[in-house]
Length: 74
Image (cartoon, rainbow, N blue to C red; front, side):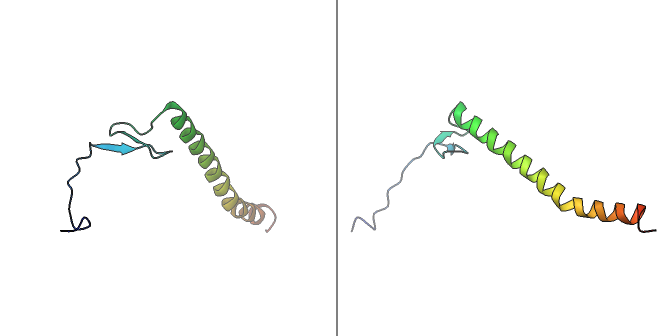
């Protein structure tokens, strides 16, 4: 039997991975350190800001057109 065909049964303790750096952590935690949690929170804050800006940019032309027809386009 070759080494490639041998099957080894590895027992890996239950765990999850850090959301930032992918290091193994306890299954009840999301981050391996306070530093990773701070990085994640900063990233989420930046994403939230970008989302609101993009939604504003998407709806602004619609609001301008509606206001134009309400006040000027009579």
